[in-house]
Length: 244
Image (cartoon, rainbow, N blue to C red; front, top):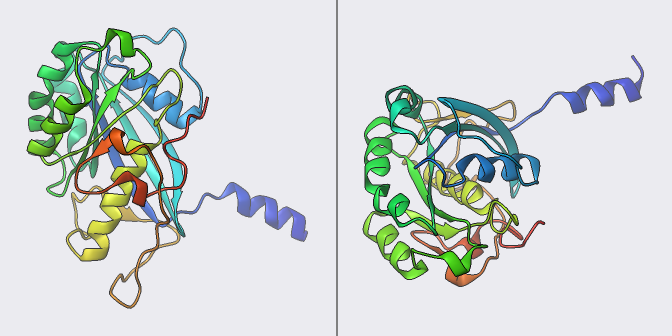
């Protein structure tokens, strides 16, 4: 095999340092599938239908020197699928909890979705609250300040996105990954423990300690659009930019 052939073969083999399982949850019609599609395909999903049961996708992202493969489980928001979708919560390391800023009912029902996720997923579950459809400011029914308070009271991160324009769509996924990596660095989360929602990849780091610190880069985003334990501006470059 020539060097060129070897190079091509190597490129086909995706390598990553960590594998993380995420669930995307919330009421039907909040734009969960569109948000996920924009994150994985960098485009708006036209003519989106309600998810039936669960749909799977994935994307590999880079934080500093670390490559993280995200397993993304998009769950149906309809009540009739609840018993099915709940089984996919198990072992999730991250949860993207979505509501529609133009639909107050979708916000008022957040506590139920959060309770289910925390009861069934990893004990170290990282949750990011996402107020979707920020492009429809004129139809807003949930103010940013109110959602920010709810997030603080429930110890979750928070930001707003638009799956239509692409504004901030990468930020919740990267924010969750950053928080999970910090838990690994601190020793609070062990990727080799069953049910952690995280595992080592092909570029595995078998030991993380004070002399071998993780490096994740930095993130800049509008200050009004995030709250919680970490500040988004410290995480990943350009996550607050409009990509469309």
